[in-house]
Amino acid sequence: MKSNLPANFLIYLKSGQLTIANNEKTAIEFDSKDNTRTLDIIDLPTKIPGNMSLLKQLTEAKDLAKMLSKEDITLEIKHRGKLILRLGKNAKPKFSTLVTFSRNVEIVNLKELRKLDKEIS
Image 1: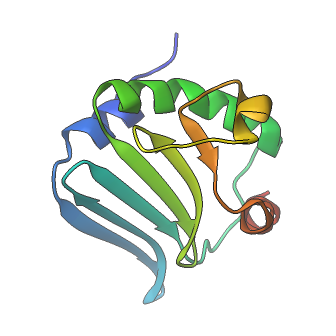
Image 2: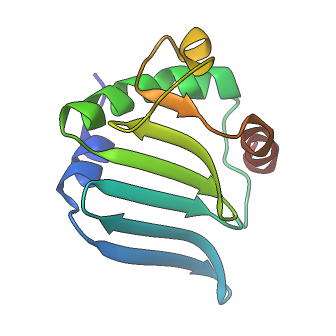
């Protein structure tokens, strides 16, 4: 059974900012304003264990995106300030639908998304 914790966190956090740093260097910034949540991955200090492919991760994200869309919430994921993914209400997928089979996941910048995937895996 999957946890709804990530979706609930994004849905109920109405406003605020959070910065995660490593040795005084910003790693992740999170911002919540109105119905938009923004997660900017700036510099992860370590690799994330596991071997889930990018395609598999995007497919898994569709459940989260569907829940966000039902609650009129949009999650924008950035990599070093560049928008790479949009999940939820304001996602307007074009070719992303062919990959994720979801109308709630939009790949905005595939090149930057692949860069992030190489950094974290």
